[in-house]
Image (cartoon, rainbow, N blue to C red):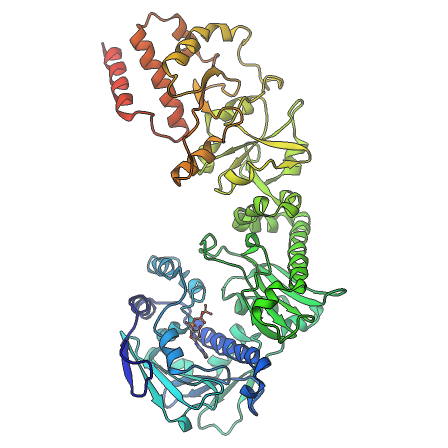
Length: 628
Ligand SMILES: Nc1ncnc2c1ncn2[C@@H]1O[C@H](COP(=O)(O)OP(=O)(O)OP(=O)(O)O)[C@@H](O)[C@H]1O
């Protein structure tokens, strides 16, 4: 970096990531390039809101121009579209820091998705990653930004044709806005329609009608006065009955930066000890960075219509997919953001809004199961994080939870449904975890449960490995993994008695004793299983040990100490095992068979054989013997 004063024009190269992004923007063909205008207007509105906030402690910043305002100016002859705001503005250094870099993490992921974009979801992604400003290059060959920061005399410009470099220069203050920013796009030939009044009117009304700053449009050279397209009134302050579904949807899009519709809208005013308005939305589709560790909630906090921050963490992390805002009537405006975070008023708001969202979800699950199921499809895995993070609301969250089960035919089932179908003598809620629903559904450990008609929850999300181990119960019934400990199924009769099991244990006791001896280094026990009906063997975790899936996950993350030796369970009714005891196989052959059965159980569990080379040799010996 040569200087930081920008006393003379200075040309710099974009950061590599910006260049890549710009290249993609310019060369991708978007069906809907209109989004650029929404992005520029949203930046202008943010700048006005930032000023409003700073002016609380420094009212002189407003001068005699206190009304925030965004103006879109069209010049058909020059082929330009200009967005001007009287917000906070940028200094030359601000410009160098923000317009030439990409600040947000996750941008790389964004670009990979954009590069691979086959379904036109690119438009939905823009705006989720702070790439908003650069979308101007989808319609402009040149972008010029002239700005003056509130309270400063100097003004500066930033200009680029989007092809690798940008130039920052001082500008004559007389040629700059008195305060705020003017962004001028020189439209590409094929984008000249964006200088047409009716096009811009249509787009602004559709996309930005509920931005909290008034928006005007004017034509250069026209006699007519600037026309107001949006009044900047706070939608959330209006009465619910006056707001149409479309208005809510437009507002949602502008507050959430998404292109879908809300799947659930919650708008209410809390009165009593604390007064605040809430307008929140649950999106219809799942943002792709939902599981990004940096991703936080994005509920905006206003105090009497003044935007304060979107980092107040109003909702717990497991509600981070909810978008919208809270406007408090009680918080003092002149409190710093840090102090707001500590304020008991904010804690009351946090509690109130979180409880209300969960109770609304509960109501929706009763009144419209399909719509609720769609929300659970998208966000269930996130909501389940609350089962271990939020002890106080655990019971409520368990009520909201939905599961695929061995009895649900791919549909969602609630725990209430599950408990209603408990078998006689069934004392636990059984579950199986894993990373793939289909594989869990076919795991051998489920066979005995299926044969007894016992429903098992199939849990494919990572988070399931955690909440299930926290001593959670539902209506007094503990959760129990089908791959852990003894299964205690013998008290529950088989749905269809398929084999005589009266003296099965005796039939295989010889093999069990033998396998215990030869597999002593690998297993903690070998025993007869009541989990299995068709498979010969399976492995399970010993009683009181960590569940197999959780252990596997922690081991993969390098966080587990030594893994516990599993228990090998054998199916006494499986013809093969019974025959083993009577066979004339040699000691060495029986040894091979014991190891092969153990490895078979591991493979069914999605693991590699204990010793892959030895496994291959044993298998070859067996094949050679069979072939003679
Ligand atoms: N009209 C403006 N007035 C003041 N600052 C602006 C203006 N337009 C852009 N900026 C600055 O440039 C930054 C980058 O803008 P950009 O649209 O790329 O991302 P963003 O607004 O931070 O993120 P997002 O698009 O997700 O809201 C903004 O954060 C802001 O600091």
